[in-house]
Length: 381
Image (tube, rainbow, N blue to C red; front, side, top):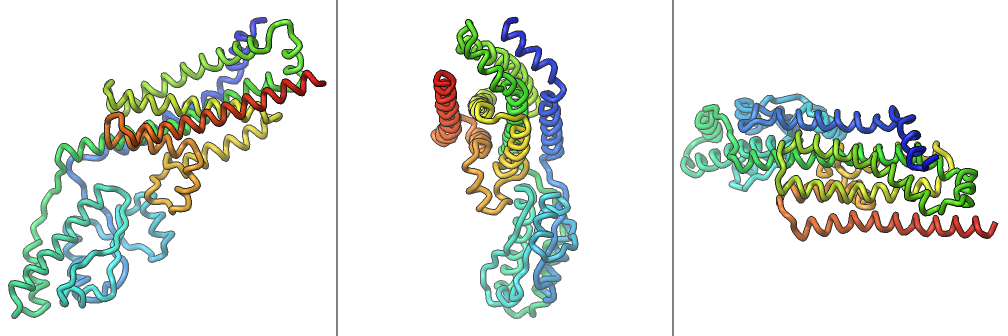
């Protein structure tokens, strides 16, 4: 029977398993798209926590002012509690007040508070409010040196009592849309890796079993032709799934074709090649489906987490980013971020795509070397 048809029969037989990665990825893309759709040109009141020394009259006055445009939340001081609250969006930001805040202001020092935010939108609004408060307080202090500190705080509070709505200009709204597109295309890393590793682990590993490989090696049909037919069937399936991924990504991000879409597709194409090369190497070496499953679960989830697919690298420890640089997923996400920020072919994009392509070439060369050694052993035996 034609090897191409046999391969497709194996794919069809395991279609339920192979479609799992596709379905999970589509749900992820819908979730990410919905999250960005909720972003408006005007920002709702962010939820913030104020930690540190809040005993001074100045700290209480600042907190009272912030309640006009934010929702103050109580939070434990532990670092893991803060990180968890930011990650799960229980709060949008944290402000840390120093114990000598009032003394610094009375001495005329410029204040820069330590803060931590879940989103750029929250950071823009809250930092702007805090800066406005300190600038207004400093201006009243300099203009009215005869006033007591309580009077200066009261004047500041009265001046800033008016509630306003913060709106973003169109450039910032466009930036949000580009960040959305980057996040959606980066989420493909999970689905692509899962689909390709599942496909090669399910199908290719069957043909790499020792008994079948020996039979194909001694077959009248050249081994290269057999492998070509297997690869042709696998690539046909991958092209179909990849096109589904890419068109759905375009629909959820920009909704139309443009130069940015072309660059996102270029990044995705290189990542697909790299993942195929990795899957080919892995299935050449592995002898049991269980080993593929273990690697798949560890690598796909681990690389997506460390690489910035699930969590932005900016909120992760530096050591995790350093580890992530040894995975193709990290460079795929970085390349998408470059496209989102620059919207054109640039040296930075070429550098990141070049590193991603280098991963693929290394995997491909290692796979060919292993295949050559395997064939040499077959001839020797």
